[in-house]
Amino acid sequence: MQAWACVRAKSPMLFSAPRRLWRFAAPSVRTGGRGVLRPVCMCAFAKILSERLYKNALLLYNVRKNLLRVRRVKYIGSAFRYVFKNFIFIFLFALLPSYFFAASLDLNALGSIVDNILHGRAELSFSQLFSAFSLFNAARWQFGLVSFALTAIFMPMLLAFVEKHMRIGSRSLRGVAKRINYNFVSTFILIVLAVGVYELWAVLASGLIYACSLILDGIAQLIAALLLAFGMMALLSYIASIFMLWLPCLHITGYSFLDALVFSNQLSADRKGKIYLSVFLPFVAGVALVLAAVGVCGAYKTVVPVFVIIELIYLLLFLYFNVLMYAAYFDAAGEEREDLKKRF
Image (cartoon, rainbow, N blue to C red; front, side, top):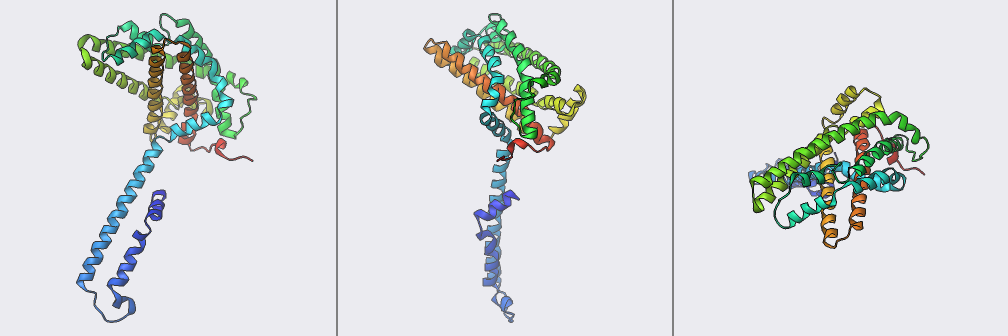
């Protein structure tokens, strides 16, 4: 109906032209006389009508195609709007985890990756690649461990705040700390599973890209490594999108882990494409921004700016993905979000 209304608004002539053509082509029928409708008029009428209907159908198809394209990425816009609109209320939940996450990254390994890309090669060792991908690299694993512990503490409170705000429209922090007793165990278990899957992914991605550096040479080596990295990021995003609604189902419905997983898959059955794009596009953009920051700041031999930029990127992505889980759940479950209503 929205697409049809748009077509009517854009081309009112398409709906009034056939009636006027009929009055022009058959005046005897309109006046009640005995005149006969001429074959030439009928042919002209049929030709013009068919052209009008074809243009009408084409316009309707294009409008619907654009609407579907917008709907596929609506979760991204919805989640980021929530983050920026309520940033002052939620950024504290991500401040410490993002700080220690930025401190845990191996900037030397990331700098080696950027240097290889700029010089058209991918001559990297497995240890360099794994240190760049892993949360617990050999040089700064202590910061990764602290970041993991802080995420397990602050993430349940952030999710409690988002759920409360979306469900009843209140942005009060009262009672959020108490919800950690209810959300902590389920959130901690899923964080452990997520980190385990991610570390396994890091080992696999590092091994495949390192194999490319052994087999190929020159620009072909770089192209193959970039394609493999892009494909591995797509795979990780797909795995994350499958389980995106699992945690909200655990917190809201109170089901067991297995029942919540089954229910989350049922909810996301007809929204898998939208959820996947909502995970994949920000993830790839975040990785590209981190590498760009390392490359630019590395050229000027400055460490503090790249650290701050990486912390801000992770802070936004941390908030985004936590909000995305609940935004997608409320949409999939058909529940009305009270935070979207205007309050006076």
